[in-house]
Length: 242
Image 1: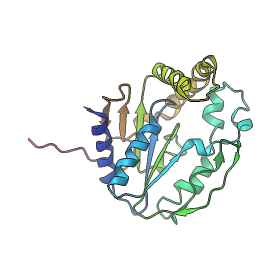
Image 2: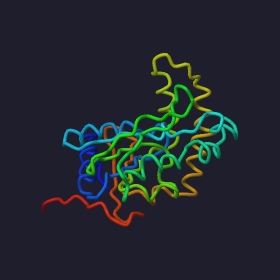
Image 3: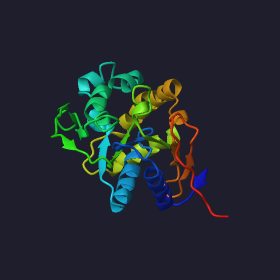
């Protein structure tokens, strides 16, 4: 277990990314509960990797949602609906993860859904360099249908109660937001947190992660490299001189 500054954490993640060699673009999952800081972490890591000369593809699970009517067919606050019905995992594999994986042609699309129109989206395909890095943030990324498609698995851990506070604070800060605090809190307590509890019970994501980031203290995080995780290859531990 290590603790350090935010910059030290991002440097450690960049080091872990550099340490892995694949014959195809490196696919990095950044998983964790809503409001745990996944997107921010992925964006910060992207800045460092690009500064080091890596071609970075940034994508998110929010661009692989299914239309609203399907997401909420069990009800707006259904935890089962959140876990089972919200995401188009088949499309995620078909247009992004598999093309970038072993034997893929590296022709990918980073989205299949447009949140603004609540409709399918089909952006132009692009071709990734063989040494590109995909940084993909989202929920439920280490579930059985997806876990073997990642080359590096990062899980961002935050106490569930803290994610509620962060969500409320984020809603209050967003310019032009019409979100009602009571609705935000109910979404977390009735839908998102129970869905995460279902995920933990069925998929055990922290057991499958290569690196766990304990993100309770944003500027003083703790992290754990776990080479004994579910992956068939390990993330090298950092060597220190003695």
